[in-house]
Image (cartoon, rainbow, N blue to C red; front, side, top):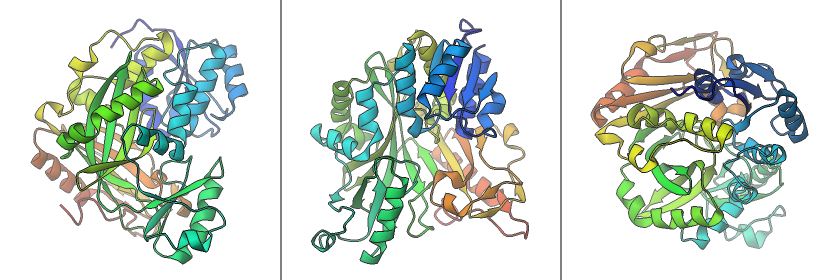
Length: 426
């Protein structure tokens, strides 16, 4: 761990559980971390040198705080909604920012992202035209099922699956309520393989760092699918490089990406990739934890260094990255919970002594409530377990083991873990 940044002050926007590992690594680097969010109880705040209850969208308040604390850098945590604010705060302070307003606009709005992708031969999900009036002639062209989603929200918020015409009106109202821009899109509901494509950028060089296969739940009818686990590397790597990579790199170069990290989610069907839901920041899925454990590249340290110095550091990205994980296999295992009160959690107590587990990022604990409105979003995630093994078979064995022993019970002894990944297909 480098210590040349000791004593530097870093303002981190957002305090959710997924941001906590970013705060921890900055602390280990000797950086004085300052975490801001609107909620006093946010977990990342408990790990910071200082914390303040300033909303991540309050740009004047954040700028004033940064000047008051004389921060040396600003960095966004794991929250898409805060990336535009991060860009504006850095601009106001004259501090390094890996994003520009043009890049933020492309990745913050699903319709603009899709239009930009198509210009470079990167395909989005097939779409239907529909406006708030739900004109009969437009509705007649729809082939169900379809997904209705806000243009500017993430993690499943405001999204609905519609199986028939009567589902459309409430789905549109839900999407508009969750949209800052009061706009929505209607797309074909994809029922095929789901992959994550994770990129690292350093001084204009783009590396496809990892590609993984998602396993999403279909047990919550009418709601957006939430991931229940991923296997690394993807079985579709070769097709990705043949069909999509060169076009994606041309697009990234054109819109001006030079530094940072980016996830693009995609469906894979009949040899073609259909992209959706970009995220220009560290991810809740946290592929960076697996990349660091296997390839020795810590994106958290890289982004912290950039925020404080304007450089990601002296390393050869091409030499560090190995999209095939040096022949190893890895996984993230998510435990999704039904709505209810968490009375006790079993089966996770000894993960720190299991050599297969490189991290356990827990969001919810005994005493917490899973609210009904969280179902269908990543807020229903109990924990994400990160596994690294020598072979795919060993990873699958580890998944089976933890699926068999992890239980979450309410006050009446009822199971809250949602069945899914592994329990019925492994």
